[in-house]
Image (cartoon, rainbow, N blue to C red; front, side, top):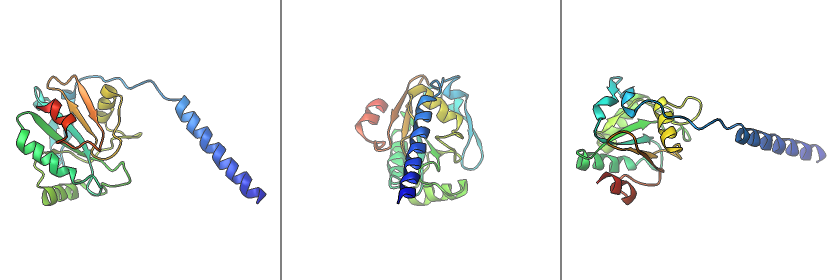
Length: 184
């Protein structure tokens, strides 16, 4: 019994030390360098997409996943793409960062999106949206907003001039008022 208490105390102390160390060693906030239009990122088929083609358009950037409770949000994103492509460009970024809910290959993801949701909006190669291997695009978005995705289907809305970025957490769907008010 005494050994169990010692082990428990040690585990709690190590966890607290790690937590405090992480809190105290936070680095300076990220700085957004360059423009959203400087990015060139491969799509699901490997074709390089130059973001300069999006100049003058609002962009809704979404981290997606195929095996998540929020996956049905693909339907709203597709509807937004179909009904308001003149006002906003929807860009999907599959990511496996939240409970491994996007385990497939780029080919698997493309097939899933087309078969289940008829996705025709631009989908990009699978990337990381948080952690040490966070993609440079998501570092840029975090630097602009101070926010990282809270889960799959978090959204960033980039203004037409590429300077203003608004973050929407994963529970806000594409057709909900906070997003639509900024799009329309």
